[in-house]
Length: 238
Image (cartoon, rainbow, N blue to C red):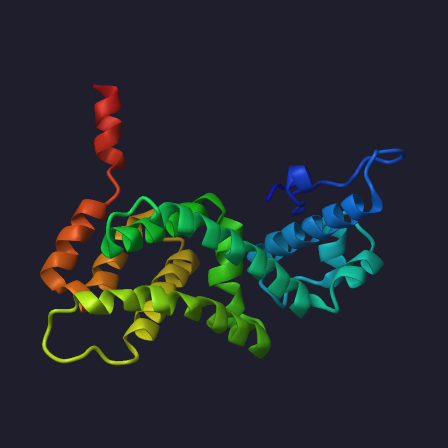
């Protein structure tokens, strides 16, 4: 999200207020633009102030709409937050599906999906905080919705069970534990401002693949998945 010259958060430039007068847009297009600006404003304010610190009046002001326009779109802040969260989740699903298509097998598809998620959130830090930090301090309904959405990743992880060569069956809780662990690492990194999330890719790959492929194979794949920004930079400078 962009900021104005006075330091106040503003919605993104491409979601700014419509020009006055005859802008040539239908009422439906105007309504869609207003809703998009409201969703962008929610992300901006929640990322900066947290869920409880963002007021409806501030959200409407940041989106350059009246309070009545907010209530025309949402019953309240909770509903608006969930709508913004779901919009990001939907976009992420598209990115993950596109990235996974290039994978030759399950493990490479999982690595590609993780890379797509981390790259996206690094490019959109406000949306990262909206999705990975804010829900935990919001409302019980938002927390429940968050858990319901991320649980949809479990069946994709469970496909790795057919590759499991260890002793005995994996616990039923394996996928839930892996998803929870990944979310915990990402949210902690965002809270601590530990650096780019993409730097976590090797650890997440090893963590996510170990139950299915074994520690040795998972570690090897994690090394192969590690970002090579320094190496690439050296090649460009040589």
